[in-house]
Every structure is written in C-alpha cells, then in structure tokens.
Amino acid sequence: MSPIDWSKPRLRVRGLRKQYEDKVVLGGVDLEIYPGQIVALIGSSGSGKSTMLRCINLIEEISDGQIWLEGEDISVAGIDQDAVRKQVGMVFQAYNLFAHLSILDNITLALKHVQGKTKAEAEEIALGWLDRIGLADKADSYPDKLSGGQQQRTAIVRAVALNPKLLLLDEVTSALDPELVGEVLELIRDLKETGTTIIMATHELSFARDVADWVVFLDQGVVAEEGEAAEFFSNPKQARTKEFLTRLKR
Image 1 (tube, rainbow, N blue to C red):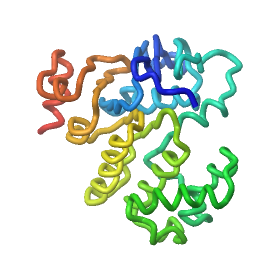
Image 2 (cartoon, rainbow, N blue to C red):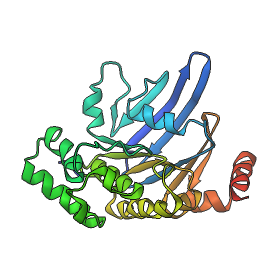
Image 3 (spheres, rainbow, N blue to C red):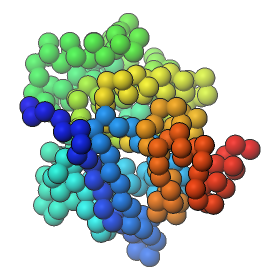
C-alpha cells in the first residue's frame, strides 16, 4: 500500500452539474477534500446536498463536470463503477440494514464477498468495531431489536469496516429521535480521530461547527460560501449565509 500524500486532494470536483430535464439541481460545484478531513455540506432542503453525494458515489449520472478520486477521473465514460464504490462508502438516513441478517452478518457480508476476507478475518474486524461502539453484546441480534441510534451506528460501522478512502454520510441523523442523535454524532466524532475522510450532508449545525474541518454552504445548487468551520460560523462573509444561519437559530 502506497503512503498517503496528505498534501494532495483525496477528492476533487470541478464544475459538477446535475440537471433533470429543465431543472438544475447542481449548477457547477467545485470542491477539494484532503485525507483525514471532515467536510460538512449544509443548506436548505433542495439545495443539492444529497444529489452531490450521490453524484460522487456514481449513483447519479452527472450532467457535466469532472470528479477525481486520488487523481483518477472517476467521472470518465466507461469507468468501473463497482470498483469506485469499493473505495467510497455511503450511509443513508434510512439505515438500509438487511433485516434478515444479524448485526454481525450485516457488517461481515461485504468484508467477505467484496474484499474476499475469510469468515474469521471478517468477524474479527466486525467484532472489533462493535466493541468500540459499545454494541458487542448485540452482534447476534437482528436490526429490529436495536434502537434507531444503534441501527444507524451499525450502518456507519458497516461502511467504515471496509476502510474506504472516502465516507459519505447523507443526513444520517434525520430519521432519529433527538435523544438518539447524540449516539451517532459521537461515533462520527470518534471517526475523526482515526483519520477517516468524511463528507457529511447535515442539518446539525452545532455538530458541523464542532467536528467539521471545513463547511460548504450550498444554495440553489451552487456553493454560496465555504471556509474553515470556526471562521464560517463565527464570521460568515455572504449575506445569504448570514440569513441562513440566523434563520436556523430562531
């Protein structure tokens, strides 16, 4: 495995556009994300946050622009999308755990069938993560026996266990009761300490301020403002940003 070059972007996006017939969802987005960085995408519903994540993971076909993952153009025609998705983990707000599999089997499935690990190797990795997040005693339980917060933490760990180059989190706390949100946010805070590279679309602004290194404010499909998290929240430059942040504080 080649050493990580911390000075080069892990992900680079240039002129990303996504259009459905006459509706422009992303109107030319530029973005750079470095290894170990956590970037928060914020913005109103319909601003393009989720669409952007889905374009990066090649779930949505882009209308124009380019996306590079560690220097490789993954937006080029004919790219092996499955190979790209082995490097990019994505977690949705709806958990998407397999109901017929135990928590342990949910996590080990891709480790065995995508990465070719033995049952013993996969279970060692999975149990290590479950122990780390306090769910080792739930390894043999099924998803319907876990709380929403426990299910979401399992979904995140399932993605992280594959050691992706990039982890995409799409409003992973939106479907949770308020008292369960903290469990998931704590896991993301822990992942920051491991050097995991994360892009998270979130409406949890206090969490974005505390955990993100960089914040990108999307407004009507374009980047209205971006910057270091502390500076972004304490001293926004654009009138639209100030209006957005003020409205959410009410």
